[in-house]
Image 1 (cartoon, rainbow, N blue to C red):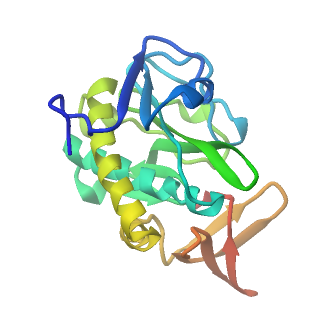
Image 2 (cartoon, rainbow, N blue to C red):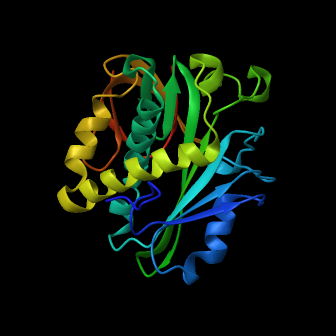
Image 3 (cartoon, one colour):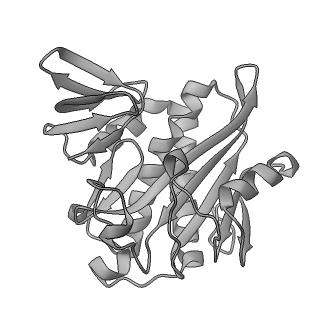
Length: 252
């Protein structure tokens, strides 16, 4: 259900002119929130990605975080990265992007015409085996993208929605589309579990059935991308057999 402004009922909407990072703001305000809340920054001064990597934030791009107070165990909570990926996919479709231009890259990127247009960063705070709050940070190259020289060697080519499709949308408009898509998928996830989310994600997965490389800080695994299992692990078929990988950077 949506409010009369088009925002999903029960979700807060907080738009900030400037902040260090929306995930940092989420950690500061989480305890004071009565329900889920979206935080959008029109300017972010200390953007970051996975493993503390810098994330450049040009004007007109999207930097937002959804703060949740989940009740599941941490392993189930972490599966919301797939919920967020699908919500981004649906938001891009709602913008007018053609489905054949989009793909989802494990564990948490969205590709547009083969380049990275969006990324997701989950951070949680908890104690005693529970998650007190979850911050789902989302960065989207709506208007501009970093130059190839600004990203890691072998990383995906950065692209923007505007440059690849000609679609111009401001961050607040994109937030409304994303929040609506996420609310619908969150309800599906909490009602029916991970299986339908997993099935829909796999139908949109990049490079499934092809050889890819999964790299951690300690090792590298090359194999055919078979599936994502019920725990959200990447499953590769290698010369040593099937390998399930819980966390890694993927290259292809």
